[in-house]
Length: 149
Image (cartoon, rainbow, N blue to C red; front, side, top):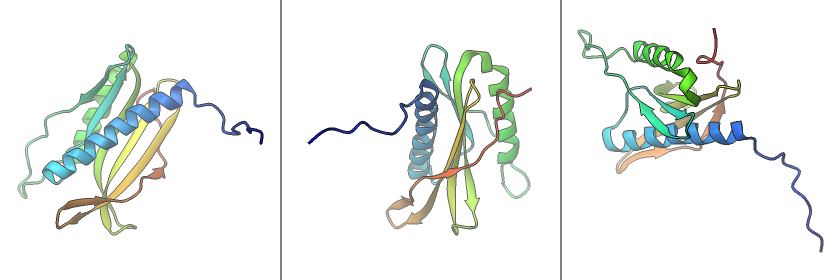
């Protein structure tokens, strides 16, 4: 028997950095859902020195219905990440979203590398008696938003 070489191209540094950043963000979001039943949008950065850091901002004041403007929080996170982008190799932003096609809520994550690559995914989830059940991660589309001018 002979060994056959893999036909998969080798993973690039950018792919690995995107996967690491997005994976950290999605995993952290899953932990927040299990512990708190949800989460506010946040970011994860991969610094030039290889450190992963969580970027969170304080939510604004709730409206008259007690709702926080998560859309404004996402905008603020993107603005903050754009301001600091020279210090990052990659960033990911995650948010808790409604997935009408799945009939559930989900985690949406989008990672962007300073070299232009973008990767995004959703993880549908549903409440269960014991907490939450997470479905398989699905790829999603996303446009660059940090390294744009």
